[in-house]
Length: 165
Image (cartoon, rainbow, N blue to C red; front, side):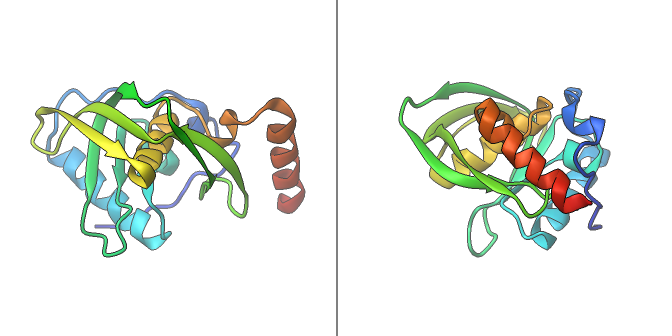
């Protein structure tokens, strides 16, 4: 396993839709393992493959304090989302040092290809739902700040550009 480098905003891969994974093979399992190692090194609650420059529809998440509930997703699709939302600050290692309050569904149902290559369906709630939705955004070429209004998004990106000089 390896800790992989992040691509930094505004790298075009962060705006690209990830390709579906046709099957779960050893190559995919190795990518997932590297992603988990990278996520733990951040430390973070989740990671999508495009964040490390791999344009495959793969994501991992683990929001538990003991890091004992690893979630590996391939080709995740949102099936249902609760109308009840919660707002919490989100950030990204691709845009370090910044965060913004983002409102997301409190409970979701997602269909995905699991580690065994079987189509699975799982319910997620609270922080786990937030992390999975955040990673799914990355797989669609979206960043967390795309969920902000134009004024707040522009202010955040202006602040980022200023810190990069």
